[in-house]
Amino acid sequence: MKYPRLTRLYQRSLRTLNSFAPGKSLLIAGAALTVAGCSANPVYTTTGMVLTNYAESEATPYVLEMKDPEMACALGLSLDPLVYSFSRVMSPPDTTGALLMLLAANCSEYQAMESEIHYLRANHAGDVNNARDAREQVKRLNADIAHRRLTAFERAMAAYKFDPGAEPLECPFLFNEQDELTFMMGLVTGLQAIVNDANSGAMAGIPRNIAPQAERAVQCIDNEKWAGVPNAVRALVWLLLPDTRPPMSPDPWRVLANSRALGFEGGHRVASALEVVAAETFGRPDVLEDALRAAANAENSMKVSEDYRLLDAVARRILLHASDKHWAANYGYRTPSNSFGSLSPVSSSRSTEVMDLDGLL
Image 1 (cartoon, rainbow, N blue to C red):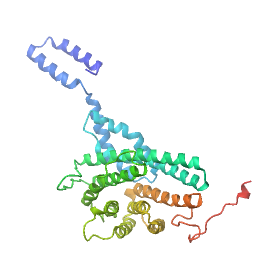
Image 2 (cartoon, rainbow, N blue to C red):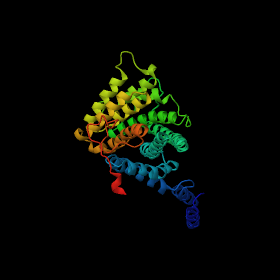
Image 3 (spheres, one colour):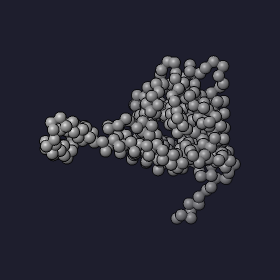
Image 4 (cartoon, rainbow, N blue to C red):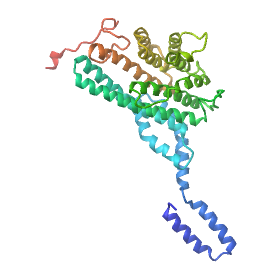
């Protein structure tokens, strides 16, 4: 037995029970052994159930209402080992675990973003050694992100007992909006894992068949209800794997532009972020400029969904990073605070602020 105190308690109980009739003694001893347990403390199971239920019903909605991506990702890093450790004594808390691992992956992504800007600035300055070192760091971090995102994808699929490769496809039963969001973001995260693996030089070895699986499975989610994200996922997969594009379907870039507009109406820019990822991946600077300009303009006109502020905050981080990469590569510095939405100082309709360095001396 693993619990000495419970064992001693059981042995004392046996001595006390000797005064009972043999049959009754055996019956009561068996019940005591069942309660004490030889492999798992029932208190742990109860605690895991309470913690998991609290995370799903209260913590998750609270986190989704946050607008601080770094604090949210820190929550994922700190809580995932605790919450998912209860899978040793109860059914794996895959629903909560998928979202926590998704947030933890974002922490690694923010580190990779900083390393990528460091690389681009060093490269622009001709600092070869620093550029080479930062580039290697970007690859390693992308491998870490890919591993975490694959785990998030697998947990999301397991949470709803969904086999994305099954024929014919059977959509999972999703009880509420939170289930729909968890399932949808699991698919998005699986697709992101492929992109991260490609950016790492295939160090993570993420299965490429996740892409067509995500394209099929995301059709289980209502596109308009979820602000264009499902169709944006499909369009991105069509660009990655043209054979998955159905006959007579619209041009993927048109689908992405339409999804972006639905995102603005729905109160978050996740679809817009997916459009920017596609533009970067497939070398479409025209789409990139148009998408960033529209996303920046939306800040003044879009009413961010109060229930999903975190989605828009994370998407904005991705959008701003895409802008920063362009500015760092071409000008050696990040996007000026008043130039988000523009890819050059000349084309910006807003005047670029110039610091007077003499005043600092």
